[in-house]
Structure formats: C-alpha cells, structure tokens
Image (tube, rainbow, N blue to C red; front, side, top):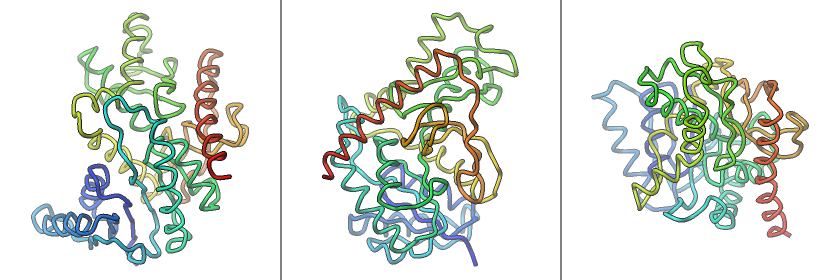
Length: 311
C-alpha cells in the first residue's frame, strides 16, 4: 500500500508543505481544514500540477477527518497565526483548544500515526498533543529546531559570504527568544565559528536568529513565515519515510535528558521510521545548560497555564 500523509491546516504553511510533499512523490496526501472549499481548492490545484512537475500521487482536500483515516504521518499546522506585536505566548489559549480538538480527531482516525506539531507556541502545543493523544513519546514531536538552525546557518553564511551548505549548527531549546544556539557545535567547513566571527558580532547573529520569526512577521504585516517552516517539516518527514536515522533538532518529550523532565524541548534526536528513535544527549557547556534550562522553564510556564485552564 502507498503511504498516506495528512496535513491539518490549509494555510500558507500547510498548503506549501503539501506541495513539497507532493513533489517528493512518496505518499498520497490529505489536506484538511475547517474552512469549506479551501483544502479542496488547494488540493485540486496541486493535483493538476502533477502532470507538469512529474509527480503522480493522490491529493485530497477535505473538511472531514474521516478522509485522513489510517495516515502514517499527520502534520498539524492549524491554529491562529501570529500578528505583529503578538508573542507566541499570546496564542496559547486559542491554539490549545484548536490542538485539543485536532488531536482527538487524529487519534480517532489514525491511531498508529506519527504526529508532527508545527502550531505555535510550538513546545506547549506538542505537550498538549502528547497529553491528549496518549501516544508514546517517540510518536509525538515538534518542528522547531530544524527551522531555527536553518535561520542561524543562513545568517552565518551571509555574514561570511560562504555557501550555506558549508555551515553546520545546532539550535536547541524552545521555539522563541529562549532558543539556544550551540556555538561550540557551530562551524563552517569544519572551522569553529568562534575562530571566524568576533564574539560581539556572533552575539548579534544569535539574537537575530532568536527573533527570526518576528522579523518576518514584521515585514509581512499580515502573516508569518511559511517557506522555511514547510521545508523544515519536509526534511523531518523525509527522515521518517526513508528511515534515514538523521540527527535533527526537534521538540521531544524529555524524561531526565539534559536535566529536564516531563516537558517538550528542542534537542538533537535520531529520526527514523519509528519517529524519535533516540535522544542524542550531547555535552553542553555550563552556560548552554543554563540557557536550555531557562528555555524549558519558559515552556513549563505555558504548560502550567494550560493545565490550570483545563481544570
């Protein structure tokens, strides 16, 4: 049987992600949204691009989760997008209710799927999905670190005027201004970044990375990033579909790793056909460990707020 992948949310991230996955041609796709006509129209448009681009997968747009039944992977992009001046925390109460409903429907129709969360605030929404779904921790993960790392690598390549493919980095922690770029694990063609960029300038690039999403929101005014986020999710899906055992920074449920317990946080994981197959507990400097704990504390604040709201 062909693989089946569902994308929940037919906005810019969901629609672009569906296009990227269609062009990979490794699964039939379902695009779901509550807005009548939106997923159907985008799915039909993408389907008609197949003969031109060269893919031959079935793409279905629907307002009904029954059409997503027995999906192998479900990616959740739905929720209210950030507006200028709005923090990810402001999204919490609205999106937690959306994610609760979405997750219940996903579990009902695709109880064996791997669930990838994209909705913001990312780490808290992954926590909500894990709680509601009851899935084992390897089958619930969040997209954040791949995107944050891509932004960091882009800014480094621009600064040094080198190919972005030569920049290597890891950005851990929560998806937001508490994220933790690991400078000791950052290099360009194997050369440590600290040897190439002065400390003060490097700090400025780190800060720009931490505010990368907000910078795009400020430019767009009526939306948020979607090209890079959708590409980041697609890389994660590739790792799962092709069982690549690829090491990527993703939001994962921690049970003592890095000194964090009972929370989702961005850490390096090995992604394969079973989802998260291993959490790579790399050595951090005291400052990095402190920053990662601070990031986890920020996530815990949101989780506590959700828990109080649910009582």
